[in-house]
Length: 251
Length: 251
Image (tube, rainbow over all chains, first blue to last red; front, side):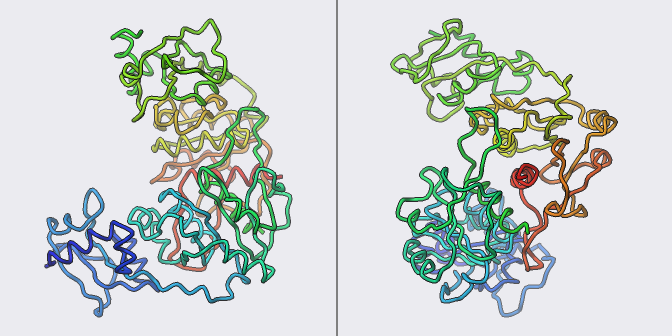
């Protein structure tokens, strides 16, 4: 069973305003929900199709409502409802850590596209990056499209939304190297890259904003190997993130 | 002016069957059309909005029809018609070359998603790869979605559709190294990678098919750096292509 009020609440979580108000988000599908169950993220309630058998154990302390296919259709954001949907609490942000000095951190300067954000979260997970620090205008990681696109990685990577300029200023004072890619940067393949530091990736259309660019003390370039003068001007931001992370981690 | 028959022809090119029958495809938008004009691809006819001034020169020998916005709407595949649309001939395929021994070639084993194919063509352009050899079941590069996703790169990279198994057998006899990524491959970051050879990328769901896998003599692995046992199992195929190409080209 599910009440009309609960259906209304869940559907409202499609909007950032209501996600922020309630500090809740939705995760759909078996892989994603079980990845979240094994993470630090708190699951408040699970909705499961009444004739479905999960492949993993759902702890007794989590409320679990059995719904019909028709009822699941009322709460899913997907075309076909998956057999399991979870209502989750947004994790508490804790930026009061020394992690910035012990590993690589990704900083996102106004990434707009949910698909790019999802891909970058997945890349962070792949390359063992613990934190992504986002400017306030970056797409919301708890947007259902982003949550799905991360394929479970959102359970393992900590996302922080903050004033990026202030964050970089503070880290710069701590002598943490701050990297970013620029057309006039140094060839990334020929640089000594540190084992810790912050890698800033810029907006899809505008790149890294001038205020943020001022905080960057290591300018990098991913060179093109094309012999044509009319070759593609740039790599998509998520592709650039993948190539940069691979280069930092390869040693 | 544009005839009803021409409108019908152009719209039919949305389907692979009619593209193959007519050996024609459509390119939309200023950047893409001018990139094609500066390439080896033959443009048969251009359709341009009557009140629009192009930033570049259109050679006199190319027929150029001036159309109203309403007429352009009848032939565009996009939501909003761009000011310029070109009707292009599919280039003749010439696989009788020694290029395989002089540089890197990408081979695609049944890539299905037009977005992935477009991204891979764009990556080939970025990394200076001249040829992509595709299995017969790979998505069609002249699909309007792929053409747009390449952002002009389709003008600079040669695409070949062929029996991939036969192609790899022939190149293997020529002692050309054939690379592919596998879960049991050797760490790509620790390998000597050759300056020429064929890099096979597999289908989104199934990976490299068993018959093609038999032709691969250098098995590679892109390792994950995640400390979590439940980390993402794989990178998307276009992301994996970007990371592999970066690693081959970086020296």
